[in-house]
Image 1 (cartoon, helix red, strand yellow):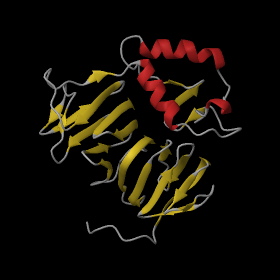
Image 2 (cartoon, helix red, strand yellow):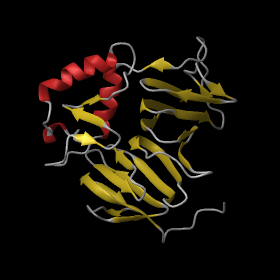
Image 3 (tube, one colour):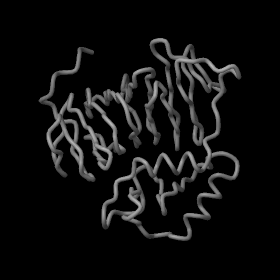
Length: 248
């Protein structure tokens, strides 16, 4: 496959946003079309939710920057680059031979085949939380996997539902382990990337319900986690809380 072309090819559009946000340093607008190599950026108060052409969703948190290097829905080839910030990706299942969905940070490459996950980069550290499906995280440059265990292939680590991994340039003395993400970490990452849309449905794509900022999924995220989130979510079942900024 050749290099992605410089713009001119549609990748999707902005579905919702909280100002201030920009596309290629220009003020962003709801329903604005997104092209290959477009750079999305948010200020301290800004957030953006973008729908890609294949049905995947990107929810960019505040103080974040994400480039859509390539998105070819027909061949299922997607490449994203995040220099800093936080983003939630709800990715449709990859079914095409050779298809890929990759997100690159300064020290890691994240690959998925159809899943829902969070990625954040700050202070030379990439944090990945998997809500459902599986995510492959590969350190690049001088980075090492700081929390790495379970399944791995070569220098990569596979993160399953309810798990998280941190990639940093410093190898911890405790060795490499994948850890279970806590309810606070999961809910915090969802809250940090949520975009409030009045009248939006409670159910997000991928079968996950966001209720009062909590994710409810058919896959238990760790021992007791799925039950705990469900119990809290029932208090506001069927409601969307725009003021919380976490509607799907």
